[in-house]
Length: 438
Image (tube, rainbow, N blue to C red; front, side, top):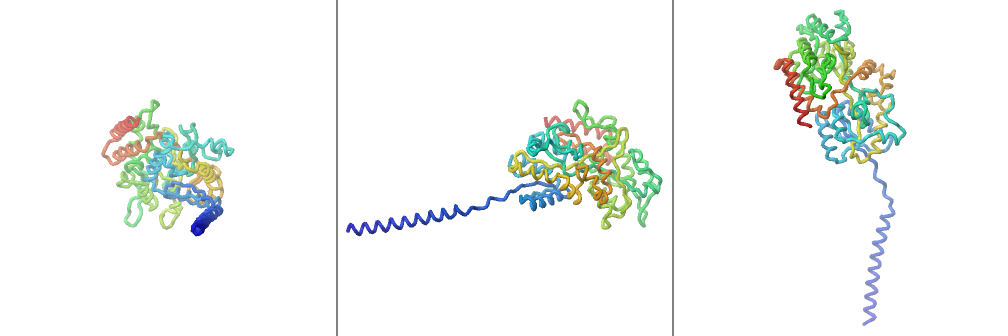
């Protein structure tokens, strides 16, 4: 009886031993498979359109060369600011790199949402951005403006240009516009003497954007600055209703007499359509539109457009700068890899490739590249414009201020308010915004 019990116990022990051995073998087997480490990855937020497309292609090239996958999140311009601001303020670490329109930068940097770059550059043997970058572009990447720590690098070097019909200027013996008075005189001459098409439609001397918000402000600021206007006085208080500011708006409305009907609601597309169809002779515009004038599918004025820097008045003309910057969020998950990509993407070699894809550069050497100048004849003018350009006021509240200011500018252009009324009301509204956001 005892021997039977012993045999049963032995068989049970043997079964248990075998089971344990099998479990151990499976465990050891799984431990010795040496699984591959997960692939490195970065996440990049970009704007849709030509500027974002150039950076997206650069990211694909980087992935192919370096083996680091870059996840790209693309947003329309009207959504990108809010999306980035919400994510960075909530500290999700969703993005390793972000594109920023330069007027947004003071808010992001002022709220300490970005990584300071200088210490990370120093680790790589660089004291800061090299001297090949255009100074006005690098100045946008520092907070406070021009003098403070570096929080971004400039990627797309947009600044406004003045577009005009050189064939019509030659026909009427008009000189290239150097002042806003030259512009007004040329607009009047062309408006009165030129028609186009079988039905004799008028060629408008000028066309501008004056829709509420960004559109009106973008076309007004170069006139405003040239007339000596400043948005803020030395005391930091709003000053748009200065005599210089009111005179600038009066001039804008005078110029509007030679613009197409309804210009007070125009945005960029309407302005470009008039220029491309040959129904308007002059305008402020951005470099992104230049290539369209050589496209037979879009343009009726091939070979007829010329591009120059912004006209002056009491002060020298200055374009509004509009650079796209690349920054690393404060809570990025992969800071070191992000910096490596940022330096690679903004190098002269890679920026040249982006320029070939249609994104204006921020490096002097790329603007001066002989092959690129042959492809983009406006490059020398673009560089002069960029080097002499100035930023929109460096305030974290610019988005709200611009929207309010643009409403009153548009109302003045539509005749709803007089220039004085519009500037007084705009000044009061800007003051309210500053008080509300203290």
